[in-house]
Amino acid sequence: MTRSEFLDTLRRRLSGVPAEDVDDVIADYDAHFADGVAAGRSEAEIASALGDPIRLARELRAEAGFRRWETERTPANFRAALFGLIALLAVDFILLLPVLVSLCFAVLIAGIVALSLCLAGIVLIVNLFGSDLQGLHGLTRTMGGVSLLGFGIGGGALLLLLLDWLVRALGHFARLHYTLLNQADLAGPARA
Image (tube, rainbow, N blue to C red; front, top):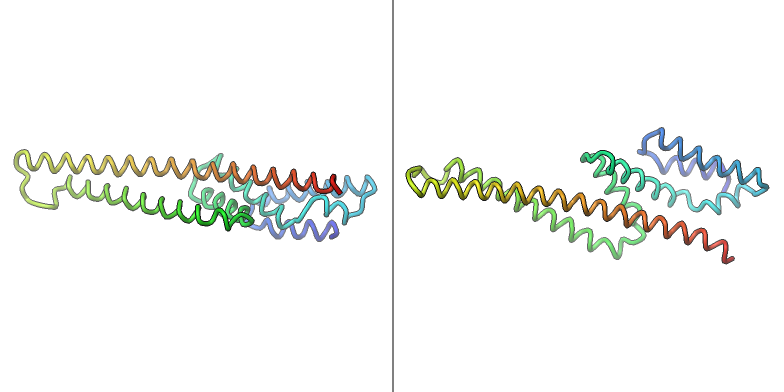
């Protein structure tokens, strides 16, 4: 693979990443080629040592998405981090897919329960269930509504904290995965 083929593949696979980040990455890898050629190595040797540009792009996209999520927690950055991690973990999908699907299902159910508790609490507070607003019965119904609303809001907050922790854990796993792949790449040529 030549320098231009490697860099073109890497650039195409980094589509969707901010342009300045792509330019920095391409400049870094172009510098690797320039340094290698100056040291007397061929472009094919340098490309082989750098690894597969498709896999590199996947890893770089995941890392960029996770960094954006760490600095600014927005739904778009969450989606970018999650999609980047899923793309990076494609190698492990047979092992991780059942776990991720189970976690997504559990989060969905917990979100529905929290929302239901909030709605039930609001309905009880507004007393739409009956017209008896007198005495202890009305007070009990209102306090029950406040309690349900509190449980729903608290459960939703805990769910968001859990989601944040899960995204961080997946990010750390992806970084470990990236490190292990790089170590394997470095150890591979040394053994040959």
